[in-house]
Amino acid sequence: MFLTITTTGTAQRPATDLGFLLHKHPDKAQRFSTSYGTAHVLYPEAAAERCTAALLLEVDPVALVRRGRGKGRGGAPDSALAQYVNDRPYAASSLLAVALSAVFSSALRGQCKARPELPERALPLRIEVPALPARGGAALVERLFAPLGWAVTAEPVALDEEFPRWGDSRYVRLVLEGELRLADALRHLYVLLPVLDDAKHYWVAPDEVDKLLRSGEGWLERHPEQRLITNRYLARRWSLTRSALERLELARLAEADDTEAEEIDNAVDSAVDSAVGEPAAEPLEEDDGEEGSELRPVPLAVRRREAILDALRGAGAARVLDLGCGQGQLLGALLKEARFTEIVGVDVSMRALNEAARRLRLDRPGPDRPGLDTGSAERQSSARLKLTQGALTYTDSRLAGYDAAVLSEVIEHVDPPRLPALEHAVFGAARPKAVVVTTPNVEYNVRWETLPAGRMRHGDHRFEWTREEFRAWAEQVAERHGYAVEFRPVGPEDPEVGPPTQLALFHLAAESGDDATDSRSGDTTAITTKEAAA
Image (cartoon, rainbow, N blue to C red; front, side):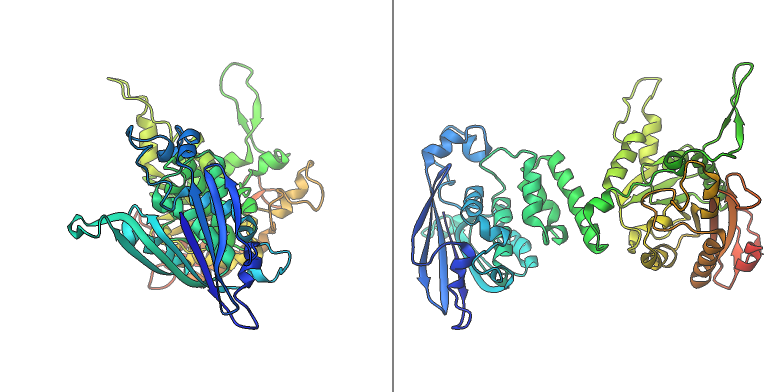
């Protein structure tokens, strides 16, 4: 296997700086032992104007067979002759990718102690691979490398030049040209060489996901062929592919939101009652059953869901978005009512969505049995419910056109400077006919004995509003986007500090003005923001 890396330079920036980046001196020919043979690094040319580094991997066919039994196509041949007639020692594959990582490890990481400024410098690079297996042909090579900034030349290699009618082989001669950092170029090769070959010479274990994400950082999360790359790199192991894709989407959202992926993944909302306990003055519910039944407090989370469902019923909603659905408590309540024919749960945390799917038993349909279909309810739930990962501060065309959207205990988790973005995404772009927003009433916090003074109800809350602050925000949103808004208490309303949770119900006004049409009766009633506030 053979690969060359060429760059050009000037007297001020000599091309031989490539030697510093690769940590291999241009005046020396070096050799390195690998599990499957010997890797050689040499410089066919090394001058200030032009410098070429070559990696030659001599594969030991015997070692390939002995060490690789049962591991990949090279070690687990499809026929008895495959170990004797094998392209592995001659065509660029995962063998070359592994050698590239081992021999140029510092360059891959973008490290250069002697010249620390060099790794961040983009260089004019030309990379050549004479024989590259490409399952998908030259077109696939172009689709994989071109989005990364490379000018791609992929010349198909004929099966036999003396017999052109036999057509082309699955190999190409690859030339990549572009101005990139050397570390980025090496990471592209490390991932995409085995992807194009669509095979690996070793068993793909779960730690391959970490290798892929480490080498793909900064480019794979935005690559248009992300799914194909991930699937092939991980040898089509679906569990690993799904894990990698989830983490890539998390990385993309974190980059877009200028935050850490861990922070986004941990942003799973906890109900107020689980965070600080039940309110002291919660209304009581009779425990039906035997004589002498006791009265027990109704959790605030239950009261909140009841208030949201009542608002949705009143709005006549059938197709509902639960934005920031968390682990699916509200989704479960929505699924219990047949009136809600289409339900979409959206959350930025893939961990929360997976937990919601588990709780709602979406991944475990029951078996069909004559006369008793134990799985029918679960199949109906799966048909009516869809879970989607997304950031609520970015517009998403998939969320447009719904009857209602719910933001239950969500806005207080958004940094105040990001609230206008959420407002635009929900009220301006998605524009449902009704929007239900609930948020804590900070004035009520004094009624919780377990909540220290000055502390918010949840560690991830960015703010908690008074009734006046929430009303002012909601009225401004309604005015800017053509909605009418009304306010409702959730939970016991204290005469001094109000209810523990406050709810705003937005109705999209008719195009003619502030008149809103009640879809249930056909009556048109004038509902203005000021009247609703009264």
